Image (cartoon, rainbow, N blue to C red; front, side, top):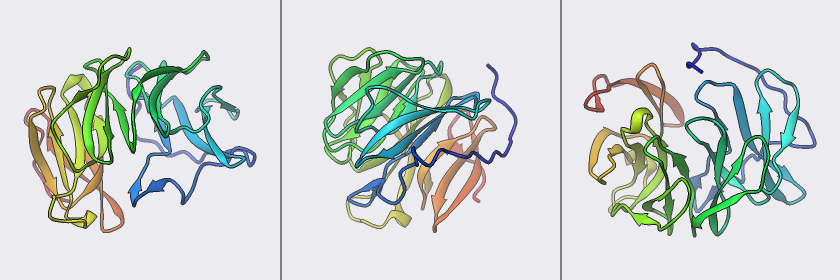
Length: 231
């Protein structure tokens, strides 16, 4: 459905399926622990259960949290554009699972990966081998290396306009000096903002990102995906 307007919601999650906290990082890189459908109607989060993780579904019009079978060891969930599937990473693979139930499908191997995002262009983008940007078809197949390194977070733009990503200069390990950039389907990189990381794009045309421990936002020029106003 059409995206909803801005709203705030306080969600109570079951004590027996608590969301992961604190441990959702590897070598200092944050890994997403929840995902929302584009219309905001469904939430999937990573729950900590008996020393492992698994994905849990929570519809926004329901109080029931439902574990998704076959997602043990999952992290970094990402919804398909139509909201019917959830892609997720494990320690060795990128997989997808139907939201309404069914067996998970292995899309490809993915070693030392942190983030994944599902694009309208029919690919799931992810980083592997710590920071190499790659993509694979939404039905699986050969992994295509995008030729970009030092990429640590990815977020698909709507309308097959590429992805937003954040990464560090090869000369710096300071996240505060990270860049946010757009990568198009051909792998061309365009810098959008410097001094920010963990990008996300809102239907209002705003980029949200983290700087100095705070989440900030700035409006983007949607046709050129260049920054039009500094926060």
